[in-house]
Length: 387
Image (cartoon, rainbow, N blue to C red; front, side, top):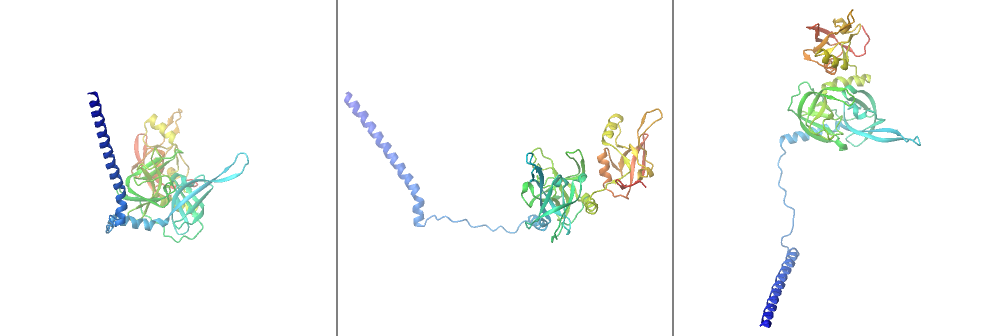
């Protein structure tokens, strides 16, 4: 009985092994056929691979073509700026020239003048300008205005390129399209697009200075874009890209540009005199004192500390702070408005005055002994001798 059981079990095992062998054989044949099929098809000319036909695109959308045309018209006026600095090796006292940074700029005229940001060339030993044809030129510094973050360079060569047409920033509207051309991260002649996000922004620099009246844009602006042009949809220059607000240091959709009306006022002076003379009232003010007065006395405006002799402010009757006979401090006039626009800080006052030129007359609203008064002051060039 046991022999029959063992024989039955052995027969079942053999059958299972045969079935398994058959299954493995079928799988092997299927795999071989799958692998061999492409070779057979190629031999027989079946299923030959070929590129798919290209579907005609049709005409570009009108806004795309406009952007392309704008870039083609503008790019030759944009330049790539690289700077170097000199360092001394401590032990050998050898002087080495090393790369310092890079930025953007653009041609201002056909005389080789190039506009960029002051911070692009600040502290550099040399600056080189590369034009769109790939040729590099050593640049000389003509003048700079750190207060506006603007600088003018000059290359000693005839530039047969059309400068960017100059627009105005006075009538810009939030929401209108803008275009930035520059060299972000050294990637030359890059175009980014966006809109005007806000106007009349203020930005505090690392040195504590404040740049006013900035255009805010969401066009991607990154390190290397500084000094490049911001252009409107008509291809006109409306600003100079100067900074970004970003914790990471890369574009976060918040970029700033110096408005072209400021550029068009400052640059001619830099070319002619090498520096910018701000229009001045002829008064002495101080931001720290102003902040203290605002905190202690609740003043909202700019406290006049002293009126310079022979100045337009003196001629208009403005009064500075003084000591009373009993030794108490008597605040001077507090300037609250310039041509009807409120000012509440020294940078704000200087920025408002910067909208005018020496020789212009401006109406100041002042607070004197608790009463508002208006005085008309003729502006003079900052540092000009008393009349």
